[in-house]
Each structure stands twice: as C-alpha cells, then as structure tokens.
Length: 194
Image (cartoon, rainbow, N blue to C red; front, side):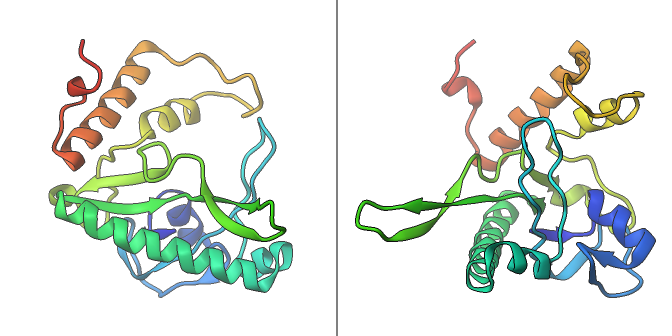
C-alpha cells in the first residue's frame, strides 16, 4: 500500500505517470502525498528472486476477484489505521508491504491471514513528519542504507548477496532502533539491555 509517491513508485510514475500500471494524477512530485492510499500488489517470488509489481487486475486474474478485493480492503484498512498511529507519534507511513496467506481450518473452511512481519522498518517506509516536504524524499527510518549500498555495486542481484560493510549495517540498525523508540516512546534497552 502506498500513501506517498516514493521509491519504485516514484521511478515508475516519473516514466509513465502510473503506479503499478494504474494511471495516477498528473503533476505529482517525488514524495507527494497521494490523494488516497493505493493498493499496490506484487507477486511473491521464490527465494533469491525479486517480487514483481503487478496491476490490481492482474492480481484478480491470479487469485480471483473476490479474494483480491478482500486483500485490498484489508490492506487499505490496516494502512489507514497504522498511518493515524504513526502520525500521532510524529511519523508518516509512506508505504508498506503486507503478506497474506490462506489458512485452511480443520472444519474445511479457510480464512485470509496476515503473515510475516508487519509495519516494521524492514517492510515499511517511515518518515519524520517534520522532515517531509513534497519534491524530495526525506531520510527514512528503513532499510534505505542497504538499498543504496547494493545499488552502488555492479551486482546482478542474484544470490549470494555481497557482504555489507559494518557502517551500512550500523546505519540501518540505528534507523530501526530510532524508529522503534520514537514511535513507541520506549527504549529498546528495556527489552535488550546492553
């Protein structure tokens, strides 16, 4: 789900005026807030491969109209609620990734299940409200130092990944720690004393 035009959405929008193949309002700048959050599905790639961004219509073809509509509905509801929580702590939730599965119950029924990690700096782009202004992506509390480092290399993006320098790991770790402490108001040392 995306609430702002950033990352791969900004790259696509700059070239084609679309996000996940859906036409978007003309004239947006990098990091602009979208009029409404948009559902941006992707496929789940095999280990070592990359997820592929797809259109909502393609998602409907792959998993069926009813299930795709339900995943979109739940995703947008979670995103909107999380955005309110983040804003109350002085953060903007720019975008995030949710992973869903189907649980098959013993009685033969099945249900949609939210899986994996949810709303962490590893799957979400958080910005400090005070740092945000349309036209440039602010420093995020996310894994951008890792992305930036890997993008600077001549690497074909196939496993194994190149080793990360200590400073890249430390910068990313500090961003995750800062996000946790600023959003929750609690010290991580309370959970993991040094």
